[in-house]
Length: 373
Image (tube, one colour):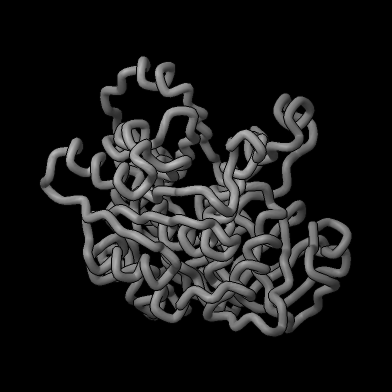
């Protein structure tokens, strides 16, 4: 029997290559030959033990590949976007399966499919439960029925199409600021607004590029790393703020000086550090909007004075992933953006060096690390 290789995280802090039988698909399923899979911050958190999962797990959910095999009824059981697909076509898939349409949240809040209680997520499910592999750090991915499948546009290279999932996060974060809004009295995101992005990691950089893509007038990036702030300017930030050992009050005054003396209209927190979320409430102007993106995992808490939320009359909008159709938006963005995506992807490693890729992710030398099985 033919075998394939996949990277298995047996427990936090340990990942190894293992062999599996090459998946046998059913008539409603698809086998994807993985070309590239990006390392996400959540993969790093998983590796650090910050997520309650049933190990062992084959991680990886930022993937692009080609259809190796397609079941005879798969087209009827998958949500296929971008045109008909066939064996040999380049595709990507959302981490999350389709919403069930039956649970409380699907029935009462169908516009928020990520709240579905019956969905599963590729890259986060146990590799000890068939079918497997259902993670992108593998030579093949077994795509089951009730999943999404997006055809990659012919004019979008795979080396950039691998960024579809993080671009979906970034575009969704920006869209959370778009509405609801009343433009003629200054609410909501618009072209003439000021936006402060706290954290210039991979998601922060793509948020900056998305803001530039839609024509936002003033984009400010804040981070502790001068190197990341340099990239943020290339991605579209007009101004940068170095987060150093200065007191918060000094940084607040610096940002106010850039924003008519009141603070930015919108703050988007992407760092995933509790104190940074607290500071987002300090930075934003009165009547402004805070978008919280960074805390997909739980690194702990921080003291917040609720009075500031009332005094500033703030809108605080959380974000739990994105609707599946966000991938269509992300692919459009990647195809048309002027951001230097070649600089954004800093490392390309083989599957055998997955542990090294996880170690360097989040460090000073790395932005987006891509594994190429």
